[in-house]
Length: 406
Image (tube, rainbow, N blue to C red):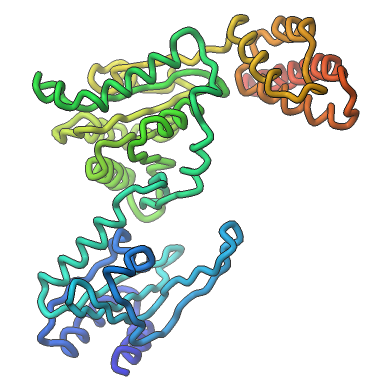
């Protein structure tokens, strides 16, 4: 009952006094026990126990607040601990764990206390849980709002991205694959010749020309841990601290792929120097391939785009030329049902009329034409439908260009 009273008392205190008050009280209640405490988000006991039930026994000893929610995608109930005390048996040791949370502004602080017969046992359990939660298994680690979060949905979406359904200019597709395959296979060679085992790769090109698809296909093919950065910004930490967190996790997860999509929007005058120091400073960054993309290379500082050993390989994703458009349109047409398929004459016309279209616009041309064709379900009508749709999309492209120039 003491723990339940302690939870109630603590939550009535000012936020900055809660953790200290509980630590003092626990030390008084369990004077012979060793204690570990903190708010590291990597110590996620619930995820750990859900998978490791064979090596760990957990019972709710005192229960104050368990939040229940419904996961509509997975069609299952999700229980999340807000405030509770657990008794855990791990490797023959009994541990008492108190989990608490309280609101601070727009954010919620989640704090833990681990008590064991001695501090070494508590620390070993803490390390075991954190190590397990840090491993990337069938998921992408996403950094946003100042912390890392595992995203299984993003990982699953990547599984459909392959180089088989990607058409790029010339040898670009093969060159990129060869580059990464050689890197991950050549650790011993790099070490033998004293070459740092790290790479920086920059994908450059206007929107819709295959950069994102290429990144997804690489992640899918390389089968290496992937860390994806959405933003260095958050409300309660400065950019430099978040950049430090990003590279610390990447070093821990190496060998891995670190993705910085739209790097020109991630970096500012204030955080650029710290980013460069983490990317190419004293830290080795062994086993990390940093892949950055940009639609606007002119916005990048020369220290990013031109300095050797940072992004030493640059791949340009150009608008598809007539040969590439022919291959792309033929591939899409092959995938259509017989009733939908274009005639050879229509394919040649569309190839000629789509000069200046990005891959994204070519894809939209097929999708929007298919939707319009469904309204008729007429064999052979796709020729006329798609030719008229080219005109509509061309007008959209022109209005978008005019709007961006204003």
